[in-house]
Image (tube, rainbow, N blue to C red):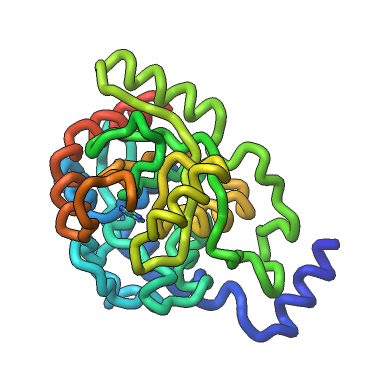
Length: 284
Ligand code: HPA
């Protein structure tokens, strides 16, 4: 089976080249550090890296295959540093399908992290709140997700180290979620839990679409994370996700949606998110 996988990959003429090139660049900056924890920071949440000590910042333009980010609120750098007592590798600024990036580009940072030895990935995002009891500023632990992008980063040749048909029955690791709930309780940080749905974007949803997503079982809606988690799971990386409800979803919100509101709320909830992410990392 492994032999066959390798053959398919070689014949395709693509695959690990970009991942290994990016990993090599980053490896050269790690020094003695071997981060086993990765963090993906969503819209307006990149400020978390200010808490890192001994931080080394690597702009995307220095990393092969990493495009510059085009979204306001997303800086474009990987940051290696010490946070909550561990070496961590953070992606400050992610790549979205709505920017026109391919699935391989969206999943490249996660796959690169895995190649560098990251075993646990904490992902954050900004999301619209669908569940009626959510309000702007609610933090939701992602219990499960729905992929409504109708795309999958695993389509194509199987990359070395990845499963063809990865199990997705526990995409957001149960024991990590347990840990997150404990941290929230100990630190008295309010934490909800629910289902996240990823759409392509970039337009926000219509009220009819939100009613549909509600009936499908989604509690929060956004334009990221799911594709990255699929790639991470194919590599056996354990995932944990937090959505910051930056606005009530379309039709639930009394006002029109805009990206500025998303960034403002993300900034307001920063402290809580840092507490949760830091608390989990500390106890890993
Ligand atoms: N919809 C989709 N993505 C989002 C939203 C939203 O309401 N808020 C933040 N990201």
